[in-house]
Image 1: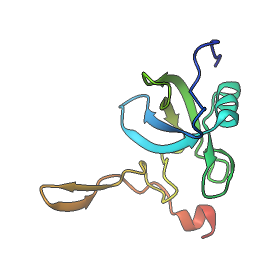
Image 2 (image 1 turned 180 degrees about the vertical axis):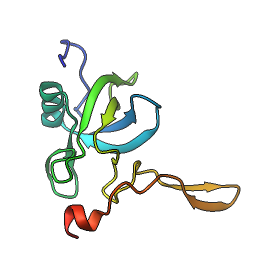
Image 3 (image 1 turned 30 degrees about the vertical axis):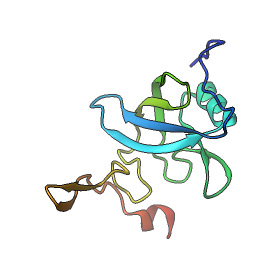
Image 4 (image 1 turned 60 degrees about the horizontal axis):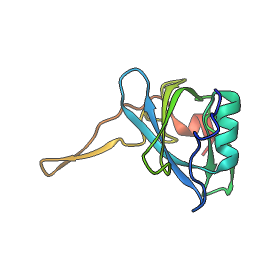
Length: 128
């Protein structure tokens, strides 16, 4: 991955939302945040890095689970304040709950349901 001189998010207001989307089928897998350090590490390694708001630290996606995100392409929105990553999700699960997508709950026609498969048991992976 290489960054052009003008192809960069606008971090002037702080963290920038980053959406991870499956490169093959377009499913939105998760939303996280990037700061300049996470952006630079993502470009350098070709794997998604984010800023963990809950832990206040740089987070290499998959560092605990092994379910890393290989970045195929990156898009920026018109204001350069949202990042869209086209990724391959290694291990099949993007969510810390063990599901393919963090967006696994759906409300449709007044009915709530689960709509993303469980790939792994988070207790076994994270010990929690």
